[in-house]
Length: 259
Image (cartoon, rainbow, N blue to C red; front, side):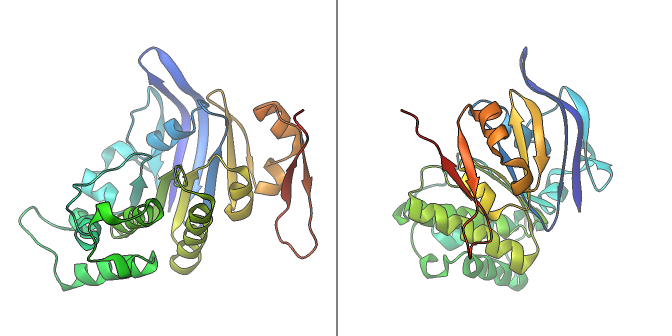
């Protein structure tokens, strides 16, 4: 499965947020979209998932224009977790997660045995099975984020889109979230596209990185090829070294003194 955007231009009214964007994401890979605040990262993700329309350009899923998919049909292929999400506070975790099966049902149908098996699988895969009878408002920030990922997983998408999934989480829960992303990718083969601010996380978990600056694609490639001192200076205006540590697969970003 492949989603391809070609010559995308996405605007908010008269303000062009993204211009001349070519981008491709694939099933089975973890792709991170990085860049400074306001660079257009989330806008690109919204465009690729049809949450926003494009002023110019085309987006296709396996060669078929994204506009030609019905909402339910698209929801069976891609799952999206935006930055902001909410549910009625009296919802139990299991109840919320089960809503991910709606794309597979007619309006008058309830969850059947197969649906319930998939709901249970999603809760176990994300580690929220022990929380299944809790109210969603009783869950911590990290627990709540995993519950929402379980809800999207229940759609059984081929590619999962996450917009800043570690926002508002402490460092422990951020690491937990990155481990979960890697686990889902390796064990289920699901593709993951994430908007990330933490470049160390992008370096650690990504197969492919897309760098956006001022609404334009600056570079793309493997983390080691893209996250370089030159890129950090030109895109983020910071000085750093990329260092190798014996026994560690991925390099580390070492920021230089700012004083």
